[in-house]
Image: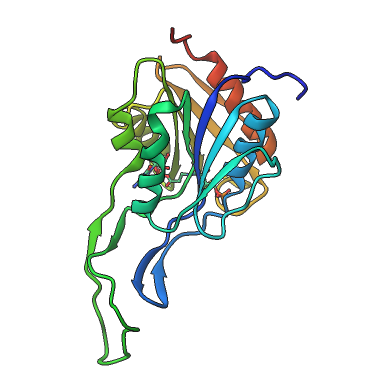
Length: 222
Ligand code: PMT
């Protein structure tokens, strides 16, 4: 788009998976490729925004060279990087797939194969969107994602409220052409005022521009 309608806006985006170490060679993670986050970062950059992208290991990099990238591994590192810059941002988009739990202890050495079974104790990670949602200022916009496998709309609306989002983008693992890894997505957007919008299956680049249009529909914050 030749339209620089986000010029002057500072945007924080989290993208990709987090990795939670078990020992020096193993980790807990998920299937996020970072394609959705990279598409959102590029959409904002081409529409004039200053983009700060907090990127999990192996996540897709955006095309625009103006985008500032902050590489991170764990949820706790992603939170640190995000909270360092959050107060200066106008818009935050939480597109990362953050591990909800991490091993309580990271073994110093590779865990040996002993016995017929093993148990790893997990502890809850910081919820980045929830924590920064509590610090959200009246003139900041927070956009969340919800990745669901059942009771999709109910869970998305619950997250919209709990995490203090202005807008939540739901993608369902049940929908063909939607979610992890693919070059396409199919989303529903739920707004803080109760309204909603649905998309078709579209390339993630086009979904990204629809999300930017959704952000423009939000009430103007002075
Ligand atoms: O990366 P791709 O392969 O292109 O796939 C895109 C995607 C499916 C990863 C993306 O579209 C998406 O849905 N990202 C959010 C996935 C997710 O973790 O959803 P959730 O319903 O568990 O989390 C809800 C929201 O809270 C999300 O905005 C998430 O970033 C945020 N969150 C969750 C947990 C946590 N500890 N911190 C968070 O900030």
